[in-house]
View 1 (cartoon, rainbow, N blue to C red):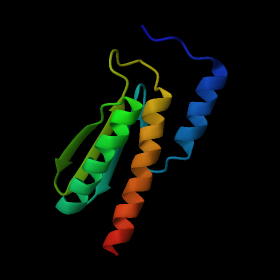
View 2 (cartoon, helix red, strand yellow):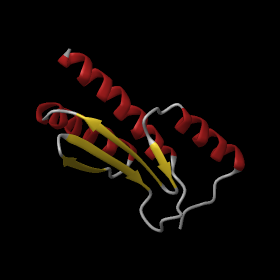
View 3 (cartoon, rainbow, N blue to C red):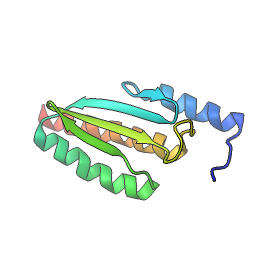
View 4 (cartoon, rainbow, N blue to C red):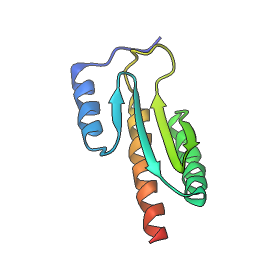
Length: 105
């Protein structure tokens, strides 16, 4: 069973999420869709696996119509609160995405 977070902790996560442009927050999950070609998608998913394992988060990654869809959520009920792991992984994904896109330019 997950421990309930304090109001300070929720504020910290809300502040961190506000800095993640392009991510949609809905209950216990955050989502992002990225326009990547197949090789960029492969590079992102390989890098993402390493960080996801380190923070103990299992991202849901899908490829659809030339886009990479990423969903990060806390396993369990739909009303679960996000943990620092999901927010950390989202921030790292943003950094990886920017690096991959910059390399393509």
